[in-house]
Image (cartoon, rainbow, N blue to C red; front, side):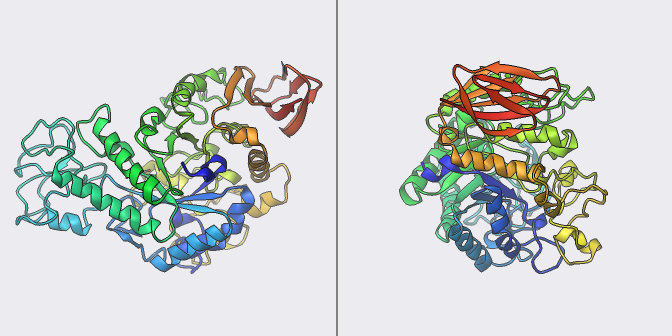
Length: 507
Ligand code: NOJ
């Protein structure tokens, strides 16, 4: 287990929209290099960069055409290597996005695989044995290639599934996960992983990590693959890390991941930040008028936490490129408390670019397969200059339009305000880095559900997201470490005003 994860806080960058250093309207690698000091000033010491490889961009780069080449619109391989070096100079780790489950239909492997004549890549993807045969319950495409077969897709039509085989083989065209053909796919994946780790990359965020082996409901064979890859990491790259898009830490950590995301979106049971969809009132926990207590989250969380706390980390997110921005439904004060919670919980937290200033969710037409996700992918708002300082290109040449509202938040504006969301994030991350108890992955106790009081060793975290003041009695006298809004400790009594937070250490 890489030791640096203990105190890691990630910043997720959607490279299209972060900073455009050459003024062509789209963000780039050199732009990220220019902003490393800003990222550091937040208290983030690691990056996750969404796919930056050569791609036709039908799914914003999650349709990879060449895993070993940086997309020209972002720069060159040398730029990326320079980013690794500059980041390391500043104590920042860099994780790339690994898309192991599928490629673009334009990847050379797929072009070869679709040929009628058998060749080295014929078994690299999952093909049925006739142009008229369906996918045995999986989405499939026919009519695109000379080969007499249909192929399975993992997500969009442009994303054919790589062949890691089947756990339960039910059709003659399905290969077992441990067949020589499927082992070759696995080795090809390792080769890609080594390529960037040899150049200085610190590991990967793994897209749809649980999707590799088909007919594998309990993820038995998919887990075997990741265990094999973890072995490679431990032996060859012990300081590199893997975080999975899996969403079930108690499966993903034993499968070999160092961290797994718990995705807080689409009204799933982890309903902390996001609106309950289905048209009814937003009752997510951090809404000031929610009638929930923190057990609505903890019941599901603790089950996962207890199962993995000694072997891996749960990664809570402020949002990501697939979720709605929290500014969609939470006010600034609600978001401060939500972030206070996320950044004082165990695990390795992830901050999505722009969430630190409360960038809005914009209603926009779809771009590069984004659909309703597009509104969370707009240009970073740095200052009040042209295009919010994101790019000097003409406004209509930008990757996506910027927020045109009068109160659009910017880094520049919030730098000047000690109580801004930006400076609250900084204070919270400083607290996290300075407080050993908050870096202990195993010590969480929930001592009260309403208000939410967490015990982390000698440190207590108390949060009152409601407008009614409340109190909490500690076992002994305590000293304040950090507060948000009106919260105090008097001897052993915590007083929590409306929408407030306090962190204290008991004597
Ligand atoms: C999950 C990624 O986060 C998402 O953006 C992408 O569209 C799908 N996987 C397919 O790769």
